[in-house]
Length: 130
Picture (cartoon, rainbow, N blue to C red):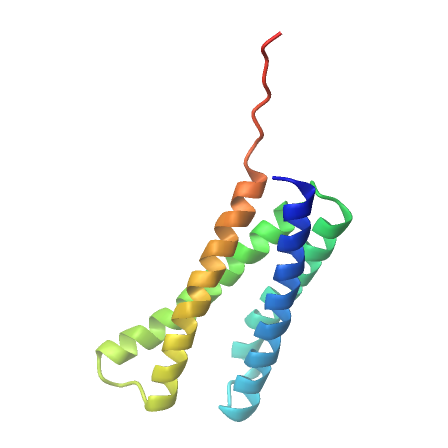
């Protein structure tokens, strides 16, 4: 992938990390999530910011951002999954049902970003025709 694509992806990652941080902070304040639930989201956002910053400074530094997106996808999947299980059991309240649908979209976005960052790490084929 070109350095321009990587740079744009890094900026998109920064934007998504900021949006995620703001929304997760609002959820924590207004819905009442504990610090134990908030901490992994802050870790994911920090990893995204650090990985994007590193990628902006060196177009070969894709590993941390890839790991950050992998962590973020797993986090989104797990937080969606427990709500889905509760929804199927009929035990999820209206607010958490709405959050479950929001998490379904964030999970898809984070899976896509993880796939893109994984592709950035794929070894480039060197043409050995001499």
